[in-house]
Length: 241
Image (cartoon, rainbow, N blue to C red; front, top):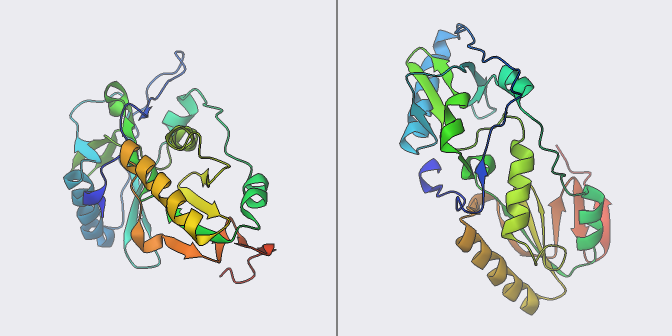
């Protein structure tokens, strides 16, 4: 749950929002939302407040709109229309790993553990002096993010850089990381337990939270980046829904 989300060690990573100095702040006018969604929105807002992901803010030169998106489960995800802020943001060009290279490295391994970073981007703090830039408006007031939100420019680059730093020295040897997908791979079961211990030690050291419901341990094969990886190699996952 959000309450279990401790977050990355701020010495490892904090998200900064650097803006083009020629850009003027934008305050979006509050847009109406479906009144039937308001109870669900309020419930989700309360969760985010209690988990210290967002906080109420009185004054901000940047204000965006909240956009509720209904999930298949019937619950909603709260997104923010950061288009104006994203246009003004200087771009971070830190690269994501090559999917092809990841698949080639892990293919042929005997054992796999597929770990999922819990609520990935929300694990990284937004630098305090930049938090006001993430402000968004609702009928209950204006809020801003303490932790890195989805939909904000450069969050993928920041998250990948942080993960690469957290697992430095282990990547391509026993673990591969693509955003919040962490793959531990080994030639045999005994080695794999040792490799898992090394990865968990890094998670504890740097505050990387995992979602146990989505983690798979000690598998002979697994789904990774749209493929099935196993000792035999690679095949495209034809079972994708």
